[in-house]
Length: 409
Image 1 (cartoon, rainbow, N blue to C red):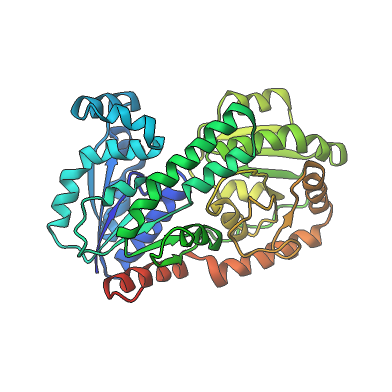
Image 2: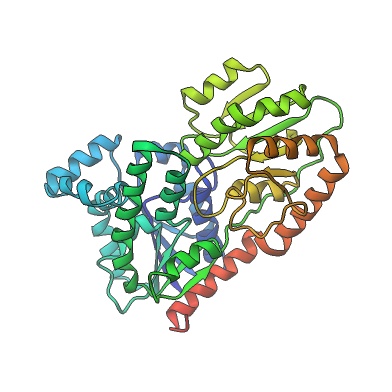
């Protein structure tokens, strides 16, 4: 197949986030399977320096078509408004990330048209908020909307986790995203989601076939943590992503004190890009918290961790941090929303706690029971091998594309 992948987010094997990794894995594994893959994406000059997209893609034979990005978002907005003055009005009626994708599309359009002239067999478009990238595709070319989460559900869960004016603003985003995405869905041959719950949201508003292509991981198990030394909990994620930021701040204020009261030697490691001043303050206020920030690879930190904590109260899709922890053979304590969309059960692959005292209770239970940690770790790794390795996920992804090309979705 000739696959044309359109995205506003640079696929990358490292240094970015779970969505970038998901795209990289699926695209490179498709190319390794013998398919012709072209990726069109806006790339800022600093991304060429920091993430070396060509160096990552070239071994797999992927064609990268990088379009221009300005140094700052303000300059991108100004450039778009100068070329399309009515773009300024879009912010009043369309969701922020949708308008941002429309701005990128102004620079991507010529590259997209050039690649469409090469007659791809199928076009994939990443993210529902970037659905506008498919507006000009000939109906004869099947296009698939690839979603990492449902943006309306993402805003809905964030609204449910707050109150007042902020809640009203987030609920307005829910309405804007729904009205922006839903009318465009019927132009697609298919939609993929990472979970059954996300699939049901789309099935409620469109007859377009929806397939679940889960998130995955390719991490290997790390060595068991040495029995000596204080126990260490690990929280990982992009720290300027609102659900992650809210989750770790909630954990530090509402859950951490209960843990320290019962296991005072415990340490907390916070690993991820772009920690803000509130997260940095946690380290200054508590000597048992270490904010590490961005790291080149997670393996050494999973190796240090006695357990991984996922105290999320909002968000959508599924959490690559859970899959990575399972793959690394590390026991996990999570909220229900943190583990949503992954086929795990409390007491089998992880422990669940939704309220602060219950979450803390499950963490302390893990810290005090080495046999429980080993059992959860083994069952979690077995689940990865059976269902959530990128090998199997890529096969499902290619099956969807093949079905779209052969009109059998």
